[in-house]
Length: 339
Image 1 (spheres, rainbow, N blue to C red):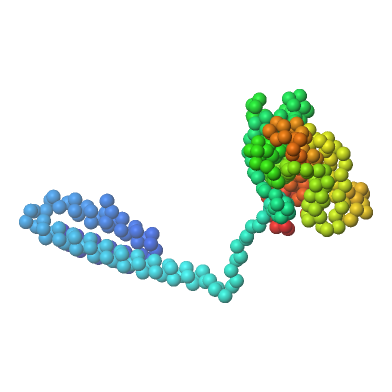
Image 2 (tube, helix red, strand yellow):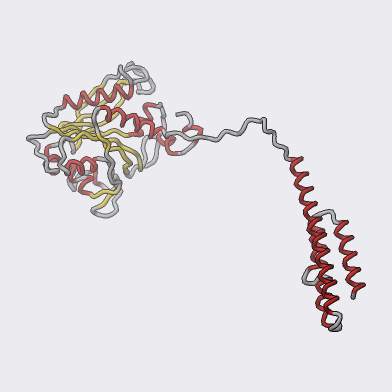
């Protein structure tokens, strides 16, 4: 038994010394110390050793195991240290090279345009109010003087959740909810996402953004509306911008108008950008309909007001001369990084 243990030890030491990789070193460990290894077989044969010799043989087995394990451990450390040193020599880092710059995002064109519009109206004493994107039919239509048989309520234009709830088609419901609170006077703009059943193309999307404004106070006239929107246009498109109002119809307002601004590309002379007309349509507006005031429990004999609405994407497209609305939503960093 002693001779066998000595042979196992010497052979294991020779194989450990000749091993040139961690894989071969592990093969030695398994062959000698594994469940089916040589040393394990010796331990299983202890039952055949006489009782008086077992303590001595057991001690020799333990000493042999300890010697082999120590040799394996030391050799493994040397191999790992050598492998690390070789790896470091191959993977030299030049600390004098400039580091890679992290890419930083910035505001989306829509956000830039919205912040500018908000800055203009806040400067004129307006409050920014946000509301629900899923709205009751009453607030989205009826309270805005749009009866049940009005074409705007056709399912081809509006996303209906049920007969009473819709995805809002405009941010005007926010104005109605503010009017219902009865805290007068009111000077507010209501920006937000709206939804309409439109096909996606260069100028339409089923989801887009609007900014609607409302003023309710005593002695408000159409002149106040014109002066406010003229100041807004000059702040947004330049001090030389002129405005033009054309009669129109909106159920929410009476009288109603659409406002055009002089083309900021050609100064009103006519160019490709304004299709040779010199004017660009930008928003709809008008004096708040008396019936709308009454439905919100505001006396139209004592209070008057005006309202307006502009598409946020339209402002972004005009201001940054973008010819396709879809570019705003494709999240192409090559496009967005220009702004």
